[in-house]
Length: 355
Image (cartoon, rainbow, N blue to C red; front, side, top):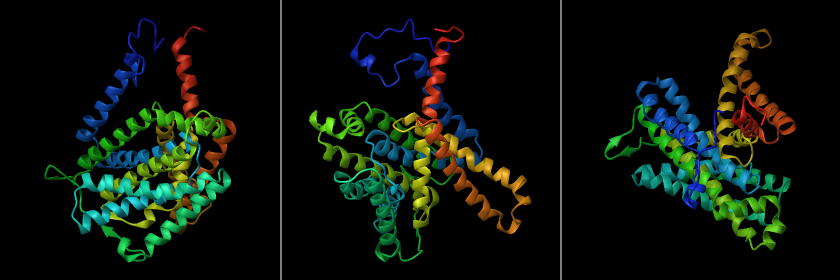
């Protein structure tokens, strides 16, 4: 009833293959984009803009894992390493060569994609648990190399301060300007991920995910597809790392540890593997979890935890909550929030009728 599909006819292949074929969906998308690009930066508070900016960056990083894990079926526990590669590539180019962001951003993505191909080489021979361990090892090795190479990071626990990006001679300093900059990149990444699933490469990734042998018999170059998935996933991670660097104004390895890899994995599992909109739903859901944990710990946690250790307790409880949510969704709803949304949408199509 709310999304009536009768009366809308497709008279061409272009209309049939449109990304948003239904007029109501297109209107909703355009209205959402207008809301995000116009009223929010004009009237939103700095706190709201900061939260939305960080979520937009996390969306780019999570989409990279959606491509690798959801489309190609290759697990990775080293996504944070790709972000650090992109971040330090952009930071060094911006500081040492004084390059603008429209050069450092693709350079960070390209370097991360190159490292992603190297990390993805073991996927040609191993899979499953062993592949997860190899990507975890890559996370630790890359983190160690960056942290202990002064030419890259400046030394152990050092930071590289990066100037704000400039667009047409205008330095993006305010919260609204940085929000619009990050949001534009996030929207472009979201559209690219949506179209990837409809492309020849995306269909090849899905075929490899379902059955490698069958895909190979159908003519799919499994090795090329796997490496392409790792490269694209790492490129998304590199872009997220570059955005973090420009937004925070500093590149530091502590921002790209194993914890953020687990966070992006949780986003995809809770949102729904293989679904771009699931990654968006999972991010929206998990962005609310820390706030509920903080409210619960500040109101009830003081009965069990000393106030001097409250900050550490909140961080630990937040990580425990992420782990519990992953287990709950894997057992009760393996397809994540995307499946719940599909069922609700199908019910609304006919409500209040039963068919």
